[in-house]
Amino acid sequence: LHKFQAEVGGALAGGTAGVRLLEPASAPANTTRLQAPEAFKSRSNQWRLLPLYRIFGSDELSVHAAAIRELVEPPFIQLAADDAAALDVSDGDRMLVSLPDGGSSVAVQVNSQIPAGCAGFAVGLPDADWLPPDTYAELHKDPDQQKEKQGGEDV
Image (cartoon, rainbow, N blue to C red; front, side, top):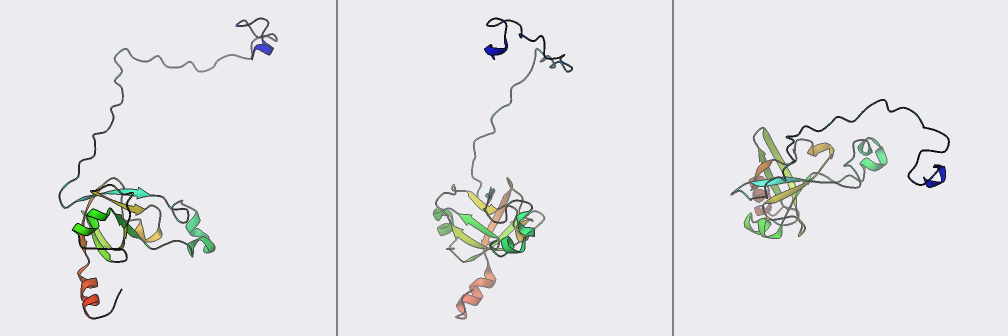
């Protein structure tokens, strides 16, 4: 920048570069600062849904390509190991996710990176668009899976 000035901190050597068309709005004297959100507090029998982004399927266009669609995994819920143990589920089991406007059964994955009281789900997956982020859901072990496992057939 100094190369283009007549002197350091002075006017530009070639004259002004133009006219400012938009002036910044002056801030009102009584502006309030944005407050940080409350710290997370777990709720009994409810898990906060956290969005997880996947390489294949989370962006809006990748699932439209046939080659990428083959790599997209089915919907899942990831839980902390302690939460999974409390719900008596492990990797591969099915879980009923209940929301105020419906729900469905999805596979469980245990992930040590998920905080207790939270449940992670992949954003953008074609069959998981009913899971809204930053809401609370009730989780229950899928009773249909239990019946199938008791009959000797694993899901």
